[in-house]
Image 1 (cartoon, rainbow, N blue to C red):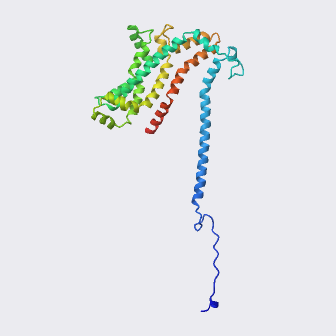
Image 2 (image 1 turned 90 degrees about the vertical axis):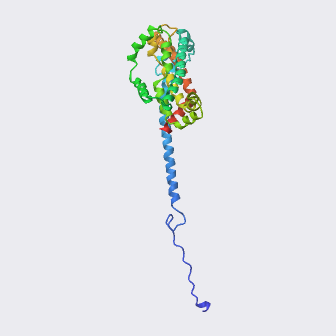
Length: 317
């Protein structure tokens, strides 16, 4: 066959492919995934913005009374009643913080409150942790019955116990002293015992049993193994109990009479009763702001442990 008789056919042109079709070289999946991931990021960003706005509004609402207290403490008597209200005092009267130390027994009230709150919370937290360890990890007869009996004490309201306790403390001569406020709390807090026991239930019993096999006593196990593990939960309960003891007003007003033994809350109440009639609200607000500082300092010191406690409780719950 000669070369002239050979019929050559031109090459077929490729058909126009639709982007994203089965014959296309560009897969459609990544483009769709890219659009989906972009929309998911935008949704997440919008959610973060809304969350930040809501938390910012909540923070402003929470901090506004504290800011108003501090602002009022630096005003003059007439400046408190000015309309519209002034958030920034004009002028700043720093003398109000100097007058509170001579206007009443504020220093002795702070000292008494520190003695009561620190002794009760430090010693009571230790005894509560020991009791929680015993209820959670030690083998005792009727352990659950004793724990339920302890929890039943939460159902008894304090007003029903006020008269019997006052009678007991009056018979032994503890009225008008700090002992009725300190001694009962040294034996622990039922709420703290319950919280720490539930926290210790998440720790395997095999750790305690292994330590016992190695010859460690229960006190050694508590100090070396249990106490470091429950430190975040213990710190969270410590600050809550400290705040409750620092702000307690009912028990001190029952047992304390003389100005030298009164706690800070009674001193602030006397400030309010004495100087509110004179419309000396800057002095009252200055004393109130000073009363807030110890609780604020304790919260700042233990804030990392509190956050760790919340995180651990959430992950284990």
